[in-house]
Image 1: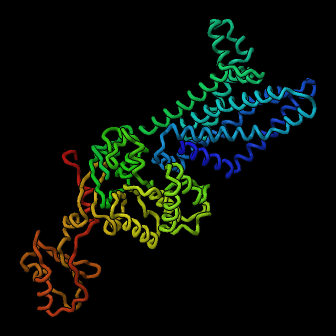
Image 2: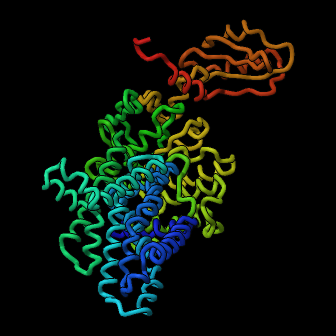
Image 3: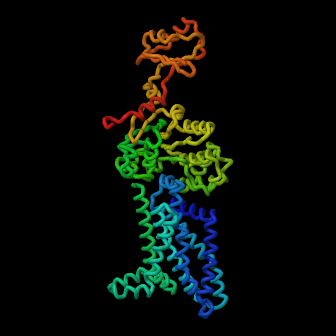
Length: 244
Length: 311
């Protein structure tokens, strides 16, 4: 376990040594604020909650998470440190997990830094802070799923651009798949059971369910399974690349 | 101890390392010598666990790299080619990270950290960012990382590549000092390094082990082994007279500086006879030398010899 935490701490530090982390944070915080107030009808709804704020997160993550993960393994490969890392008494799963946890913690820090919006809503009205908390948890879990996808894509290619595009595409599909318009589109061509299954794959549906303030085991399992599966795939790809 | 057992690695149709069987014992500094692209780095990467062998295996201190990779890696200190490290970290952060990843005990870690930093003279750059360091310093940081956990087996891929002569010397001194109880495998394409460091040489080319001997044994294979070369002033001694000495097979004169080399027949010692002849002829000998044999010649001969049969 000490190896995982050592890798995670190193990675997290590395984010803050380069300007990437600060650029990311500023853009995330500014965009989260702007989108909430201007396109999310924050005031006009007349409700003291953070629903419009959390509704914007999937779209923010869609662009920003691939930017965080694209260099995760590509950089190690190009600078030769991957050879160093794999010669240490660390299993591939430990390395993958350490890097993932660092990225997840980083997004967590960004989410914590959105606290002014939470103060604002508490100043303006009396929101259910339990629901707000659940919204944050849902958003963070969703970020975790996106990050796991990004981690996997980053192992698959040397090119950071390709890693970015692949991650954004997969995340986009997972965002779209549960939208009513998409499900309607397939209504006639696919059996209803499959449509139902497609809906269940939707990342937004599960995040929203949590954001309503209900921590359902099924939603938690969805995110758990997503993260484990994509990280597992990342481990497999890295191991496979050692033989090629 | 490092043992490789028919270690093989293919990249598609290309065989980078071909059934390599090697053994390095504690106290030995084994030099893996070969032309560029011979498979030295690939072999080391497999032993270090970065690449998976296509077939065959290796053992580090008895731990099979395929069955007990973590135990094997714990026993190993490895300096990859080019000494990669995280450029954005300071030397202190990097070495601390290495200590943590290796899970060293806190007390041991502090002691080893101080020892290694002193030994590699890194005190003054501890707070410097690795990316800003010179090549020589970065190499030293890489070496520090490799010996941090006091491993019984060290594997260094071109440890002095790109260093200036002083830095080369200090790295060699360091390796020499560590050699006593450890098994050290270094790869190099520098023949001087073999002389300076290794007590055994494994020559590989095209992934195959072509020779495994001590540097002296390799030198003995040279046609220069036991030859006498001299520079003399005066009318010059005739080559016929030299050739008449019993045990001499032939003589050569360097057309540039007039230096004469007298080659013996296999197993014959000719130094005294040549000296006697030179005295007899009253020549002013400015310099005379008994050749040990030339490694570069042996190296060339071994690594460029046509492969058996398929011309």
